[in-house]
Length: 238
Image (cartoon, rainbow, N blue to C red):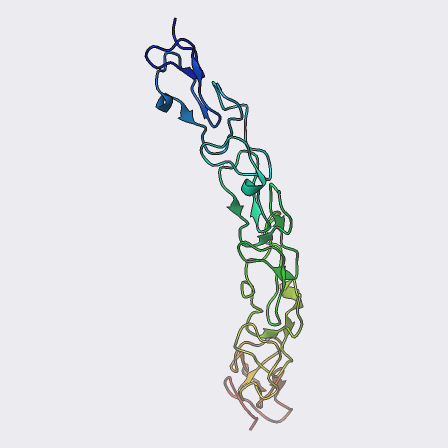
């Protein structure tokens, strides 16, 4: 009769020969060893004579390349990687996640106030001048400089996790650069303009008509009675 599935029968064979471990065939009538296909990546074939690999999915924490007989510690996921069920190769933890243990099927979300680059086995402190929030339910901040405090603000502390922790610069001053760690007390608002807190440039708000604004103004000053301030951007009154 026909050589059964899971076996091959060369010419003159008295007994069917089982496909060796790590291989399988679902077809009958095979007659060469090469007719036994290698178990595909993500599966393993632990016994001789396998007819289907579908029931032998690579377990969580391990990866099974093509032709795997049994997953071993040599094929286990280490820190910085994940191996979900049916993995054909170890998967590096993406940026914003980390994995500090072995034999894991998933990566952990990077905590707020920290960042995790690709393949992280731990998490690093968010530096001054930046903040490090959650990006999603599965991912945290991906790099140290992903979220800079915007112009007009500064942050002198590590481990910030919200833009609300970026401090607006003092009224009367301005800050044009992002990721500032302190405010420059010499950055006074230009005369003819005012900076009412969180200013990102020296000409932040034009002094309106009827008012005047000396250098370093935190708000426009109304012209006093008996004086006039014609037009906008006045630096004094007449």
